[in-house]
Length: 177
Image (cartoon, rainbow, N blue to C red; front, side):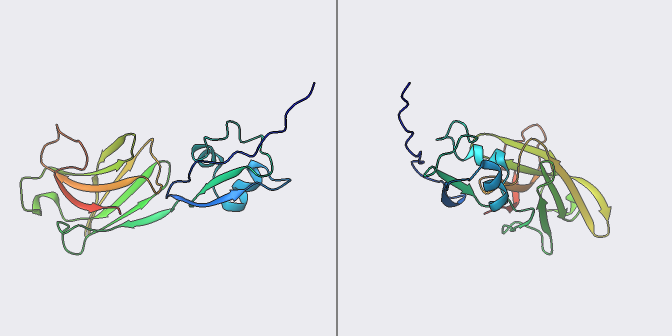
């Protein structure tokens, strides 16, 4: 039985959050590529849906290699952010948020609590931040079932209505770029 040789598969385009286009060389495997670029196989699958099965690569195939995920990042403040406050997020089993913010009752307005939001083009997730330290006032929370990557937008907001928790919240204090 004669089989037609496969033509190399190329994406129509790689999205902005992908660092490079990589052309498969003889001997390349998905594990080698994952290790070489320090990107997990799940992310390679996610950004290369033009190839059905990444276990079967042929020389000339082109992969979109996503930028490595930041392990830890600061989120820039908005004009509403209290002076001397900051937010750090880390990609640990979801997204962990650590915030140096004043007690919620010290904000101007009738705010009840701080919330962190992770918003992607497909869905959103949120968590109420809990106070874990008093001097300075440190707040923390964890967003589950979401990952820290270039397409995830992070917000930290003060909310005055805990029944309406749609992103980005009532008063945006921090917003990722």
